[in-house]
Image (cartoon, rainbow, N blue to C red; front, side, top):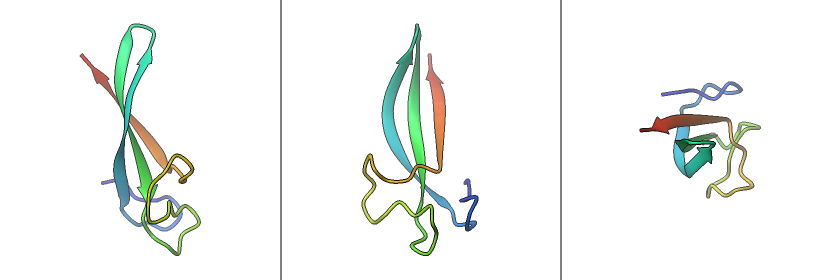
Length: 61
């Protein structure tokens, strides 16, 4: 599992849906910090306004 670059806490993984770029489709997953003491903290409920630490894209075949 990936860690927050600011505090080292494990990141929470949330689905961001499917993104289409040209003829390729990707599953988008966003990662958020769950440490309330960290400046990257996403809050208790992840929303579009929450701070995304990283995004993972998995190509769909």
